[in-house]
Image 1 (cartoon, rainbow, N blue to C red):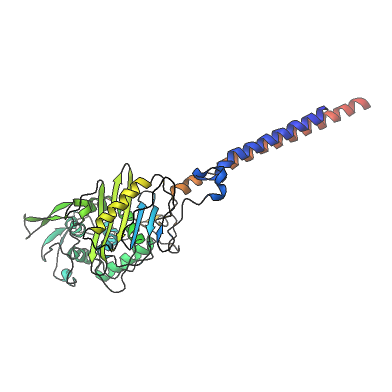
Image 2: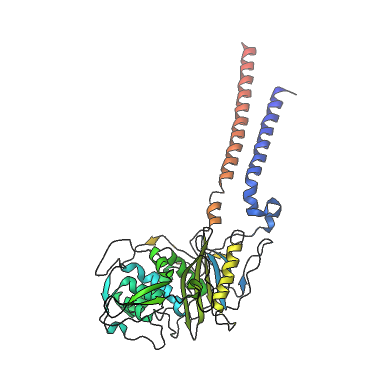
Amino acid sequence: MSRARWSTVRARTAAAVCAASLLAVCGPAFAGGPHGADDVAEVRPTAVHGLPDEPGVQFRPRPDVSWPPEVSAQSWVVADAGSGTILAAKDAHRRLPPASTLKTLFAVTVLPKFSPETVHTVSEAELAGIEAGSALVGIKEDMDYSVADLWRGVFLNSGSDAVRVLASMNGGWAETVADMQATAERLGAHDTQVESADGFDIEGQHSSAYDLSLFARAGLADREFVDFASTKTARFPEDGGPLAFGIQNTNRLLVGSHGVEPYPGLIGVKNGYTSAAGNTLIAAARRDGRTLLVTVMKPRSGAGNAVYEEARALLDWGFHAAPRAEPVGTLAADAPAEESDKPYAGARRTGRRQPAAVPRKTAAPRGSAALRTTTEAQDSGSNAPYVWGFAAVTVALVGLGAGRWRRRRRKQGAAGGESG
């Protein structure tokens, strides 16, 4: 075989080896995930933006992950609060009365605006308009309360009187309702219509397990929200002096009461009840470095503690399934956060922390999100194999061109010697 032909063979062999290397390097990227190259046609996406508005249970079966437990709730969600991924859900966008779980949105909206140390004197007008049958913490007119006291009244006793006072400090009931609606929209909570800041049954008011999970996840990003939501007992001021009476969180899964055992690692968040809503609950718990959110709306079993025991069952399943489960969607999160337009506005402004930010509104449709899941973040670097493979082929082609150039020069040199 001539030297020229042997060089061509070597160049082609090098190109073939580089191409094979390219396929070997890029192969896993095409295969995707744990399924391997043999299952490429079977691969399903491991993340979905938002959550499709579909009836029934949404869950992606895997051989090593059991199905979620059967519960009687009309609607529920199990989500990873850290990544925002939804592990399973049932009728998550079903619009239902939220009861006092809507106070979670109230807190996300108003909590950043006033320092906990701010002291406020309650007026008679601020306590007007409370609906009959509302839960109360026992606020009295002409008494001084710290903002921290008022928030403990909201989170522990679900006190509509505490909500009324904080809403008045925020500019009034109507303005606070409008602020809450704007916050819901900025968070991507498109199932929520706010008519009452305390969650009392008002015609036209509704939310969903998906939206309530969004509110809770936003709240968990605020240290003070977590502190209030996880408080089991506190002392509440009485008669304007040093006297105080004890209050206890009505979330039975947090404190352990009325025949409900406390759930290990429970952070709390918010429970609620009205005749229209039935029992509702948003529960967050942390275990082995993972925080899960479970929202349960309107159990139909008739059992007195159904909302707590069904939340317990879903949390247990979630912690077992989370390391291996394929997400069915994500909790929406939109553009980068913007500062609140009302930083601490109380009489005793401390500047102890910056106002919690609320994500900016986008034009995303319901169920969509700009939040990238962990899987998507990993995929963002998946072009690296293509880059290395392209570089290898380029090197081979350059080598082939250089070989041809050297052969051409040798031929030219040989021709020159013969003529001279």
